[in-house]
Image (tube, rainbow, N blue to C red):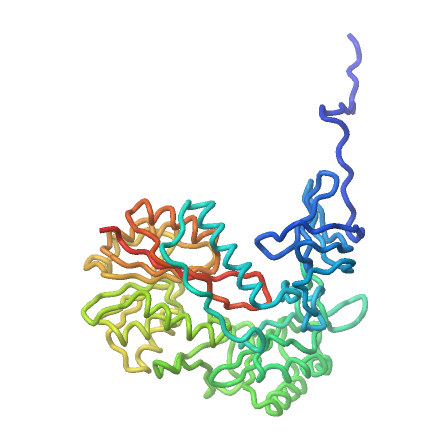
Length: 451
């Protein structure tokens, strides 16, 4: 019997496999248009290039960040032929830091890009357009971010503590000592933070730092091992110099160094004060958050005799202003600690017509005891995954008006399909510019039951 050949390789039909483009390679490109995430698109030899930091019509030199099949991700290194739209990036770290990706674009053009992104998702996925487009809801384009997480990592080879933000498309840390999108109260802290952290005697034990500016300014340090008394003294001195609270996050979770200290933020138009702890979700843009709540109340128009449902309620950001306008609010959240915090916020603001419940918001809710009475209106503010299971049963709860606040146009469009099938129509929609200088899109959509 003939001996079988082993290890033979057969050439598949279709020719030889395309050579992969190596990371770091530079390529001259002509940008034809912008993608939905604000990156420029170019085409070379059958490959599609997505180039951060470029604009339509430009000729640029791009450096490859990664390649997967026919898709190449890159960043702009040089601009040979700039667009008339291009402006100098206000931040010296632009192009390396992964935080702000569209600084080369004027703010009005950023808003137009986000509006197109929302409209395209609604049209392509759901086949709909709102009866009315609202003007973009925006605030200051800089000095808006009241919360930030700063990456901290000990570089073993260089024997150096890196402090800053993550690089674009990488786990590398870009050293940062200034950040123009932080609120003014946090900017001097950010400038002085790296030098202070490098004075600590246990750099390998450091995780990340979280900065927050609200009713008070706070600095939280995540640490994976106990801190020496000398390190704590350095941290205390730094916080005192910047009039900030010190919070430490060890095995027991975030704790204030002074147990009597609390954090929170103020919703001035409603004279509401909400308590907050590091790790809780809170909108980072105070001005747009306030304007968003005002617009939500205007669009949803709750009446004094109504029962309103608030899904994904968090700390009560929408629920408490709603409770000032209507007979009863039922607010639902998936995380037990957030439910407790929200209930405490309602009590401290002397609001007794809002009830908070924990529920699994990945499941239909029509069988829950609190849902049996039904609702005239509903508001939901889900995470990026959207609320597909929840919206599937909203019509059965009797809600005639539904306000959807979205941080992902793709899942908003997907969930809109289900709402349209239930007999709702998209009455109004518009973008919320919660994160200027980025391509991140938040949106608000009002659905009404068809008569």
